[in-house]
Image 1 (cartoon, rainbow, N blue to C red):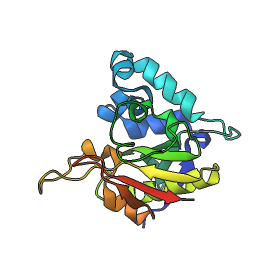
Image 2: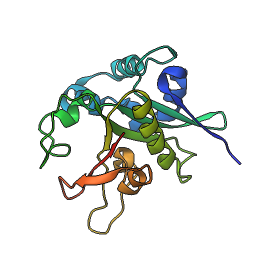
Image 3: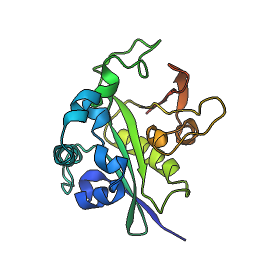
Length: 198
């Protein structure tokens, strides 16, 4: 039976995170689209995105008071990643996006509310329920680093269809629910706001 081990990204080599991200869309994104917003992300070279992610994770610096996610290992293999940090970090949701704010009246600058923004499970490890473990890891990291609440903005299938893998990078409701989050809003037909008080 495989052993699962979760480590904050500041406690692992950056190369392990890059192994999880690979060369697919996640590797091209480097978890910067949610941080930068579409326009700045689109025009930023890949190497600069990678450098920004390294700075946000504080990779290899276990004494860092901050990091931006958790790497999940299956035995010794880096297999999954969840980006999690203070909600204002994620500028894509800060501005005009209705996802986080429609029908809600919260302080957008409140860094006591954290967000599990993005999930990646490495090819070869999918279909094993690792997203569920990553959601629990996001809750644990947010709690350990002093967050008051954690949110997720999962996607639901359209009209009885299926959520494809790239869409599921923001999570799906059942994954967040299993980690203790509850739905608090349905801002669009396909997105939900889920939250847990810590």
